[in-house]
Length: 72
Image (cartoon, rainbow, N blue to C red):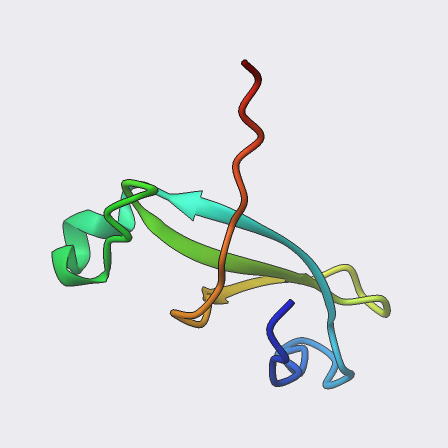
């Protein structure tokens, strides 16, 4: 996993927990150059606040890699 900078909660100011990554297919409409051609969208990180429950997203670093599980 790539080391990432912490996100501070905009609601209460404490450090948020990294939760997940998702592919945002709609982000391509705003910035077509940001699309990962292998995934067909933009990878975003999801962060949640352990204090107040706020959720924030940000674009993942470009060196994030995914593995595919292929069965024969």
